[in-house]
Amino acid sequence: MTESVDVIIIGAGAAGLMCGLTAGYRGRKVLVLDHANKPGKKILMSGGGRCNFTNLNTTPAHFRSANPSFCISALRRYQPQDFVELVERHAIDYVEKAPGQLFCGDEFKSKAIVQLLLTECEWAGAEVLLKTSVEQIDTHGDGFQLSTSAGKLRCKSLVIASGGLSVPTMGASGFGYQVARQFELDVLPTRSGLVPFTLHPEQKQHFAPLSGVACDVAVSCRGRTFKEPMLFTHRGLSGPAMLQISSFWYSGDELTVDLLPGTQVAQELIAYRKQQPQNTLQHWLNKHLPKRVAQALTELHQWDGPMQAYSNERLNEIEQQLREWIIKPAGTEGYRTAEVTLGGVDTEAISSKTFECKSVPGLYFIGEVLDVTGELGGFNFQWAWASGYCSGQYV
Image (cartoon, rainbow, N blue to C red):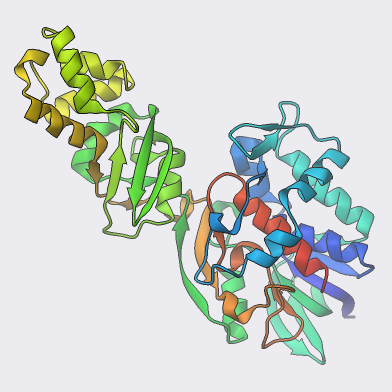
C-alpha cells in the first residue's frame, strides 16, 4: 500500500525541519525523510557543539551566489529575531560571543536547537522518518511518487533539503544535485567553502611546529579582506580569517596576510631602534605576536643582529614582509572539514518567494543545496531558517 501525504521533505537538517514545522502548522500532512540515524547532524557538530544558530547582523551582503539578489526576499521575511523568539520560547539560554553571533549558553548544547525543531515538528504534526533512503523519484499525476527503503510514498509537494557535499562523514552527499539534474535544472560547479588551507611541503615544515598557535591578522584575496584570528595547524592555516577567505579563493590564487593590521611597523621600529639600539627585532616582535610566531618569522627571514644594524630602508622592507606576507596555499582540506558547499542548484530556476522550481510545479529546493552560501558566523543557519520558513508557507 502506498502512503500519501501533502508534503515530503528530503533532509532532516536545519532547513528541512524548519520547512516541516512551518507547513505542519498550516495543516499540511508532512513527512520529513532522512537516510541518517539522527536528525540535524550538522547542527549537533556546529559551533564546537554550542551551535552558532544565527547572526543578528545578517544582510544579503553576507552571502555568495551567482544570483546575489535571490536571498533578499527570504532574509527579509524571516529575520534573526524571529528565530531568537523561537529559542526564547523554548527557554534556551544563549550568549553573544562576537558581535551578532548567537550561541547556545553554557547549560545548553547544539542538541537543544535540534530538540526545539523536533518538538515544534511534533506540535505541528509533522512526522520525521529516519534511516530512510530514497531510491527513485517519479512524477505521478499532479505530484510525485518516491520509492524508498520504507516503501512507496506519494505527495503533492516535494522539498529537497538534502544539503551540500561538506562533511561527508555526517552523511552529506550529492543527492540534491542528482534530483535537480533529473528534472533538467542547472547545477553550478561546487567546491568546499569555509575550509582550512594546506601549505606546500617547505612552508608546512617551517610552520607545522606552530600548530595550535593563533594570532589576529587581516587576510585578503580577490578584493575581499577579513580581519579575524588565524590559526596555524600541522597541515597549514585555519581559524576564522582563513575559513572566511577560503570561500573567495580559487586554486592557484595567492593570499596576502597582514600579520600586524593597523600597526605602523617601520615607524615603530625606527623609534624602537633609537630607544633600544642593542635589542633585537625579535624582542620587538615578541610584544606584538605570539613568541613562537615571532621566532619562526625571525628564523625564516634571518632577522639577526641588534636594531642598530638595520637601516631605514631595511625596516621598510620588514614592514612589507610582515604586513604583506604572500602565501600560495597548496590547496584546502576539502569537503572533509568544510563547513559549507559553494555553488549548487542554480537559483535562476527557483522562485525567490516560494522556493518552488519554475519548470516543475510542486518541486522545491531549500537550504545549502541551492547556490547560496553564507560567511562564517551564523549566517548559513539563518539562511536555512529563512528558506525553510518561506517555503513552508507555500508547500
